[in-house]
Each structure stands twice: as structure tokens, then as C-alpha cells.
Length: 311
Image (cartoon, rainbow, N blue to C red; front, side, top):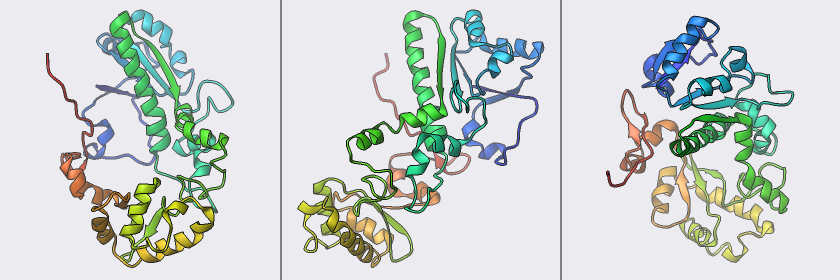
């Protein structure tokens, strides 16, 4: 894999040394001036043996460089071009700059995350990676399968905003069915439920509860020793929720996080410890699944394993 960079790169404030730049680890990096004829020749040499070209410019930039997808696919019939813009190819925002937080804002996602008082900025996992990158990857992989049949490449287009909005399909269904309000922390999956939220423990750490289904909720009451206080048949009775939240918070605050985690392992109650990044790399479960790489330093490694008989 080769990463093509301009002769002078922009510093957006998160420059890392080479060993720490895990997203670009293993990629060959070449600086090419795509505004020059010489640069075009350098790019064409790379594309002559390439399967996929990924570009993340704003709409129209590739065309202004004289590298339109139509011309490239004519010159390189095998080539698949994956195009990922920020805001899409039409509308007022299309030519504008943006980052993860901006795409979240226009998608409706940012307004739904946070406390009752204010939205909270999540990590840039939802829009950039979950929305844009994963949707583009799916399209490129599908195009590769198509190419194996039709023997020609083609173009795949999406945007970070479009991909992010695509992640909200279930939520819009819940809204249409009257099962989701636009108020934060009043809904089934945003911390509104007593049994689907985060609670502080005795050691000022946290545990996460996700006991949505009745069997898991009953097991949770047993683990918390609150079975006699609440009727599992009234799990979704909103009139009970304030007292349930209070009881859960008071009870969970009486033990340390890891004590609750160990206690919960004996039953399917959907209670897990809230780990920080460093703790997640050392947790026995994650290590048991071989998800951690230690080169050049501990970080999440290969998380997909392929099995099958070689031909």
C-alpha cells in the first residue's frame, strides 16, 4: 500500500512520530506534486499496477487536477476509485472544510449524545471511521467482487456525512414508532434507562449496565441483591425508574469496580467494567482473544481472523 502525499503536508496539530502513527504503519509514503505533469507521470506509474485508488479531497479537486475518475478508469480499466468527501457532492456544505464533530452535528448524532443539559463531543470514531471509512470500505470490497466477474474497475462514492447518517437508521425507526424522543437521556440506548447506563463505584471508577432483556435484568437484580426491591415484570414501567436509578446508584457505590465485574461474571447480567484505554490492553479477556499487538508498543492489533481450507 502506498500513501501519496503533497510535497508540503499540513499540520493540523496532531503530528506524530513515525512509530506512533499506527494508521499509516506499513504504508510506503511518496511525495508527489499532483499539479505538475511530472507528478501525473509518477502517479500513473503507481496506478498501472494498482487495484484501488482512495481519495479524500473535497468535491471537484480531483477533476481540477486533471485526474477525473472518468479519465483514470479509461486509462486504467482495472482500477477501482474510492471517493470519500466530507459533506457530499451537492449542497451548501459540499465545498466546505469539516471534521468529525461537524459531520456529527449535521447528521443529528451529536445532538443525541450527552447529558440532558448539553451535547458531549464523542471521540472521532463515529463519523470518520464508523461512518465514512467503513461505508467506503464496504463499497470498495463490493466493487472488487464485481470486478472479478466483469473484469473492469469503476468508481465508488460516499461521504463521511452520508455514512454517519446511514448509521442512524434504527434510531429513525424508533422515532417513527414513537419509541424515541429528541431529549437526551430519556431513551432506551442513551442512558435514559436505569438498566442501560453507567454508574460510579466505590473507588471512583465506573461499571456499565446493558440489561435490556428481562432474563438479563432479573440476573442483574440478583447480582445487585435487589430482587426483593423491584419486580422484573415492571422493568419498563417508567414510574419505577427514578427509584430504581437511585437504588442502583446507591448499591453500586458500595463496592469497587473490579469487585462488581468479578461478581457479575457468574451470571448473564450485562454488567461490565468501564476500562480506560490502557486497562483495555491488559484485560485478560482481550488478551485471551489475541487482540493486542505489542509492536512497536501495546495497541489493538488484528481483530479479524480468517478460517477456511486452503485450495
